Image (cartoon, rainbow, N blue to C red; front, side):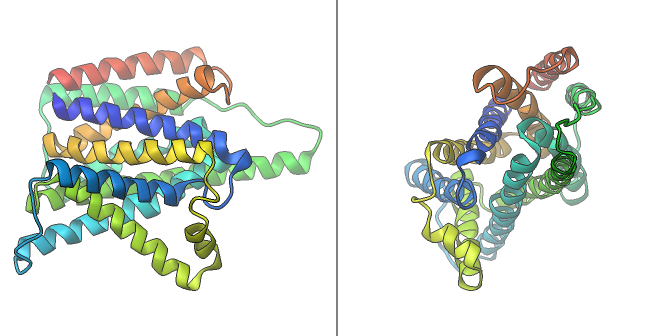
Length: 306
């Protein structure tokens, strides 16, 4: 039950981040808060490790410790770097709602990877809940998005091309995040400390940015302009992403990969409701999407009771 609750809280954080990414796009400089989110994840993970961490890195000659760190590093590159960069770009191109719908492939990738690499199986009740949630997501994904119409055909064509590219990036982000779930779980089989895992993964992301900054002017501007390019929306986004990812680590410590991934898929509905009714950055959801969101809630309840 604890793992499921943490997974749902993580989904809420990611849902908020999806909306604030879109909200901050108009005034964004640099990477719209992606690097700041990695830094804040390191701060959150490090703080929790110092307060409640159960695992030290000694002895350093222990093969299990290094294997666990390796898995955490891989997870960090997949989620805090590749997953976030593609996610941020996807939202900027396609909008919070459209991009998040195509990022619902995360549970598919995560379940397949977990089955192949971890041999995870799920019980009948949990499988029913997962099927209900995935059905609701597919129900929302199959709704046709309204066409873009204006007096400028060239602008319309460019906007539609950006939307298609954003959807593809959303799918790529799903593959990265799905793989990161399994890498984190593998890391915690060697080092059973979620806070340390979050810290190591974020530090791997910071190192990636630092090394990339050596040869890339764009990454150099991102790193050097960390605070200068961070406005209100970028800070909110980064904080939500950091809290969401740290919560996800703790969720994985209490339950299996497939359950966390499926519950996290409810992020799409959280993004839709926040975008439409709280921040009012996008149109109100249709009846189909409203029904799908209610079905998703029912699925999460079934998983929690399994």
